[in-house]
Length: 236
Image 1 (spheres, rainbow, N blue to C red):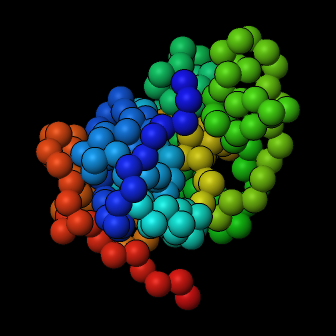
Image 2 (spheres, one colour):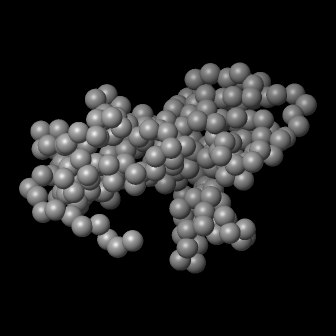
């Protein structure tokens, strides 16, 4: 496939989309681009197909702000299944059951979460879009090739334990750019001596952009006008 053809337009601004389950972030971009009359469109932060929630789309000249918007803090509402690991670190992969003689208590879970808050080193999932020798890690993993990823610095501002009923821990996470909740699920399980994979993930905010008033999939079937867009915030 070649590069998409864009229509020149004065339309510019941001559209906050509530990404449905099963769509990739680029699926969102394609739908927004079509609804906007094929004006140049990008997004400010990827969400996996199995995740839902806030994707900030940048339209027209607002695409120049993509990198700046990607650095905004993000909030995730997530459920982690501590009974098994998976190759993909989420529920899409085959389960690798872990025998747990005694499930960890809520106190033990809270204590295990504490070291993950702050500036930490995190290894991305093998099935991720990280580049390895010029290829995406997930493509190499799907080909059955060994994928070795280096740890990299990420920031987690806070983790709130919302609910816990073995084997599901419900968390509210605020973090910076590039943090993989799938990796957190895996590493939390390793720390506890249990399994750990992502059962569900919903992004509820990217900086000031939340689900309030976000466009859903049905809204993207209708044309988008300038009046539907938010202004790009000024650079600091």
